[in-house]
Image (cartoon, rainbow, N blue to C red; front, side):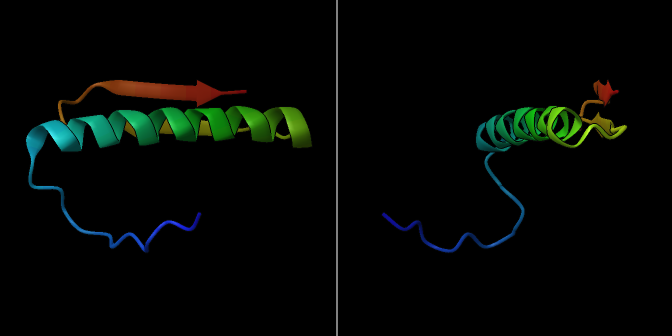
Length: 59
């Protein structure tokens, strides 16, 4: 199955925006960890949420 093209635009619905941020943020953290394990490189990732919540990952 092929997904349709996703257009990058602001998400108007607040609930949908929060869910999308959570999912994509977790995906970024997972990818940073995978990069660390597979390539043995130093990785640093900082994410600020709209409510000024702070997420970080570093190797």
